[in-house]
Every structure is written in C-alpha cells, then in structure tokens.
Amino acid sequence: MNKPITVQHTYKSFGSLKAVDDLGFEVDSGTCFGFLGPNGAGKTTMMKMIYGKCMRDKGESFIQVFGLDPAGHSLDIKFMSGVVPQDNNLDEELNVSQNLRMYAKFYGMHRKEARERIDELLTFFELSEKKKSKIRELSGGMQRRLVIARALLHTPKLLILDEPTTGLDPQVRHLIWEKLRQLKKRGLTIMLTTHYMEEAYQLCDTILIMDKGRKMIEGEPRILLKNNIEQYVLEVLSDDAVKDLKGCAEQKGARRDLVHGRPIFYSDTMESLKCVADNLKHGEYNLRQANLEDLFLKLTGRELNVHQ
Image (cartoon, rainbow, N blue to C red):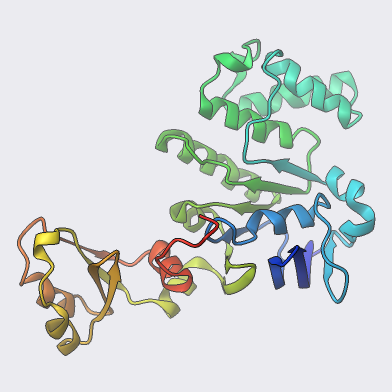
C-alpha cells in the first residue's frame, strides 16, 4: 500500500482545549514522517490516535492505518506497529535479554523465533555484550537503544518514535540516526516527534510543523527551507553590540527580527548581512546559513506559550 497512513479533518479536544484541530496528512510507505512543534502543540496526541491509544472526536474525522480505522481496529494496528514512548519504561528487575523475551511472549512469538530475533536486534543496536546486564547497569543511550529494539521485536510495518533521542549525547544520537536510516532502507515506515531540528532534518522525508493543534506547514525539509526563509542569518551575540543596525540592514534588503530583545537579521545575500557585521566587532556576531530551527521559530513564534 503506497499510503499506509491517511489522516483527514481530525480533531481531538480535552474540554475546551483543542489538542488536534482539523489536522490532515498522508505518510508514504518506507519513509520517515516527522512532527515538529512546541510543547503542547498536539504532536504526541496525534501519534497516539494513529495506533488507537487516544480516540479522536466524532464527526468528519478520518484516520486509516494500513487500511484500518484505529477506532475499531486498534489492537490490529498495534500488532503492526512498534511504539517507542518518551520514557524508557523497562523492567529494572530483569536483564536485557529477559526484557525482550517478556515482550516476545506478548506477541506470541515461539521461543526459537524470539531467541533468533533478540540476538539479531541486540547485534544491530550494538548491545550484544550487554545481553545479561541488568537495566540499571546500562547507560541512558543503551536503554534507549534497547527500547527501540523492543519495539522492533515483532517486525512491525510502522515504527512510532516519541522524542527518541532526548537527553542523549551526540555520539549516541548519531548512532540511533544511522540505525533508523538503515531500517528505513529496508522498507520500514517511521513516524517521529522531536524537538531536535537537526534530527528532523537528518531523518525525515517529510515534516509537519504544528502549533496549537493545527498544521502550520508540511513538506520536505530542504524544500521548506528554500521556499519559506532567507538563506543567511546574522545573530548579534553581545548586549553591548546592540546598536541602531536596523537602517543599514533595511537599506541592503535584510529582514530584522528580535530574540528576547536581541536583533537577528535574515537575507538571501551575504553582502547585505556583511553590511551589518561591519558595524560589529569580532565575537559580537555569528554569520551562518539558515536552518530548520529558524523556520520553526518564524512559524511558531519566539515567545513561550502557556503549555511550555
């Protein structure tokens, strides 16, 4: 099936709060689809609706996952999905292998099949040497890899990741990214929420930025950057350097924004930003290419909302 996930006109309310508000999107098979948004934007709620843990509001809402509606087929969808929650909810009284064997029983896997699959996944996630280790003996990165391995035990068609690398050091994060890329090449469909813009840029074929339950923008990360924000950014780093730079920037066609009172300038030409930089000392500014975080802040705002 080319479109394993289709969502149309979907709503979810908690009292007067609309956690998901008229959301719609499609996910292609064998791709990675990412949700970005501030805390409270509705990302996790939408993910839970995909596999039936959270029921959408009645009405025109439409969700199909591998041709099934989560409202009536949540168990079937869960058997086709692997879910990695935000927390590492492993059993600390059991060792690594025992944690996986316990989950294998939930999926009705035969002992030999389970043993072979566990060995395969521990090798894939570079955890074979920790097979007999207790959970409390593992680092945070090892625990995270184990939770992902657990979600893959039954060879799901869909892997759902809720902030998969939060709090991990860069080495572990890059290792997990590489493993997810390999899984995608094998045809696995992946959905994730993340606060790491670089993670979304590295992994996702499509991203959907949402705020207050609604879709702000959707598309391939590189195309979204090209079409929706200037190519270069100059950040003023020193409070002492905050001068009347606006006139120079406007003359050269640069756009000026404020980050907690400190100016930041955007332009499609480096020359217009060098005009601003010429008025600053070395170390008082940072001149760089625009990234996904710049687009995210442009769309969702720079001020904290009540949910953050």
